[in-house]
Image (cartoon, rainbow, N blue to C red; front, side, top):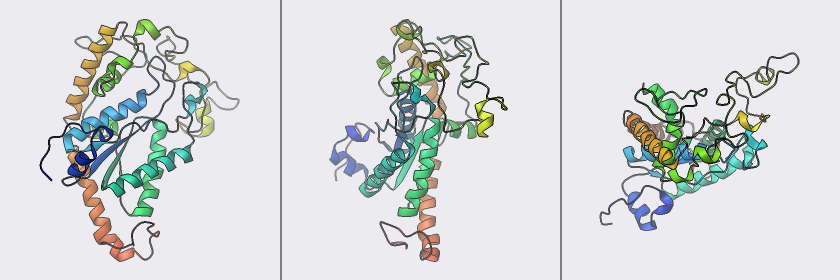
Length: 315
């Protein structure tokens, strides 16, 4: 195939020829795993757009592609909102696993699943485990925010009690990083202005409404909170009791402010992601794959879970 210039790294926007050409030199694809749920003043897909933005930034560094638009997965406690699209855990896992089977069959040997929503991590871990048992191909669960922290890169801290929506010399706006994700994805004008939504019922979380110490759950007899009753800080099987329990800080008031903060947020995110060598993760995934194929399978292939797609030995 003759050399061609990369127009885009977003798989659905590529032609088949461009994908075929890419796969002659590399095999990396990032899969942002999202959710469509009530989120205060922000659009319902904010926690999908965050994962897509992170995936785009990492793909640029490692010559990878991005499979977008996987928006509808388990939401959790936000199903009390009629904007939230409900998907149960098992359906979510089966759908994601089917996508991963296809990607592997297409030639993407290094599949990286990227979350930005808490419950997505549960789904991803289960899918990676079962996918590995059935294909003997390791995938990577990569939470970019955790990876940034582990590499000593600190994003500006978001204070959920903060109501300052614009960036100053020593202060980043309370929603600026979220707006930066929409900017990176080319969707900044999908975000409403504060003038349009800041005063809608349930559009702000309790902290922004002046109740920073208010928990989403009332005390239950014998326990301080529902969290204590369920034995964990953040249980997975919950329903919130009010729209404002899962929301955002106020948004900048005008369209000009939203666009400006989006540009600032994009700059901050790009600077942060450029400080991490993401290639070490994709290189590590390849090394792990070869180790399993060349060392573990020849030794234990007869006792490992039977491979549904290939024999349990290195080919």
